[in-house]
Image (cartoon, rainbow, N blue to C red; front, side):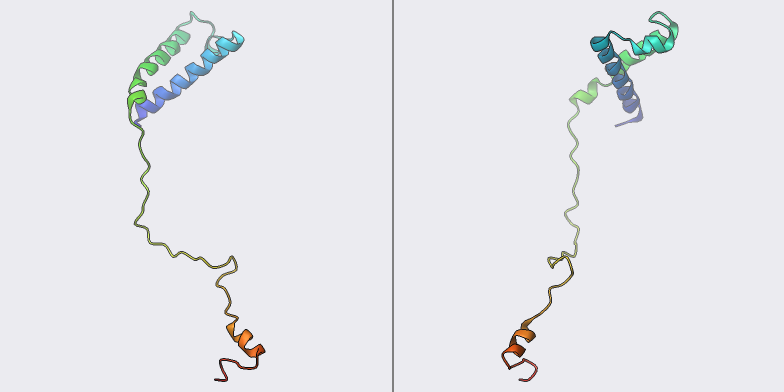
Amino acid sequence: MGTLHRIALFLVIIGAINWGLIGFFRYDLISSIFGGETTAISRVIFGLVGLSGLVCIPLLFRPVEDVEVDRTRQGNLNYGTEFGEEPDFTDIKDASKGNSKKEK
C-alpha cells in the first residue's frame, strides 16, 4: 500500500469516526474543533475526507495479498523433554539385576 493510500485511509477513518459521532451523539467533532461547519478549514477537511474515500475505492477491489511462508528453512527440531535430552537409564536397569552392560 502506497503512502497516498495510507493517508487517504487515515482520512477516511477520521471521517468515519466523525460520522459515527454525528449518528450516535449528534456531535460533529470536526466542526467543533475548527469553529463550525461553514469555516474554510472545516470545509477543506470535509473535502479531503470525501476525496480520500474516492482514492480508497481501488483498495476495495484489490485482491488480498497472501503472506509468503518460508518453507525452505531447515531448522534443528528438538523433540526431547523441556529439560533437554532424555537420560539413558538402561545401565541402571541392568545393574539392578546384577548384570551391567559394562561387565559384559
